[in-house]
Length: 349
Image (cartoon, rainbow, N blue to C red; front, side, top):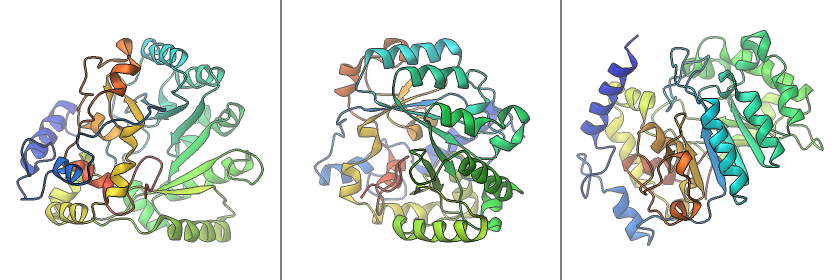
């Protein structure tokens, strides 16, 4: 296993090589710069609408090492948000009522020792709470077995990755045995009331393509997921969120190694949709890194592209300054604007 420093150096070289971060009118594939396409759509410079979602990555530690993970999360990652930084986040929420949705992510956010305290404090502030759970964490250790009950007690919406409704494709992407563990975890969540009509307990699943292609129709795929999971496993859920893989971290590694990078980027560029660009999540979201630094979105966070304004850390949070900033973009942003669009909440258009 390469050291984190070595991994970062390799990825930095890769990003520079393929032109992920814009520094000219086009990348070295000859494809138009993303900001040019925004300009043609009347959206450049890209500016926020109303910031209402506060996304917090509380650590990169995870019990899984998924092939498509843009966070590059895994058991060997040591970066976790401190309780002090979490308190700074809570202070920001107390002072800014417009931040109504708190989206807690990782890694496996539940592996942060202060996760339950943090979620409980947010609950007291009467905010909508989303937790991005990888499902297998619920079965990973006895101390996590009561997570469905904890989620329920705090009205938490659970969003979970399930790359496909068949074992082989899911295990190829997320690791051997993950599908079976995910199904068991979904059944436990169902037993707690999640994904059941009339309970108000939201359980959403996430689909990511397993190869170098764009996702199919979200509505059609949701219908198939619901039919198969109900029939085979008795599992129910609320919505399927279809997310396009962005050329970042492990998925970028896959594209480069497999020789699919150029063709994949061409697919993204050719599928650019102005309607999706109009609704990209960075326009209403602020993303907080595990160390408290601020980003336009979770993807920019992984590329270390901080917000383009003077207030870059949670301890100096200023909603007015952030509201007037210009959003940082790059070639990777084509992934959010291709076809029906893609965001942490699924399709956009």
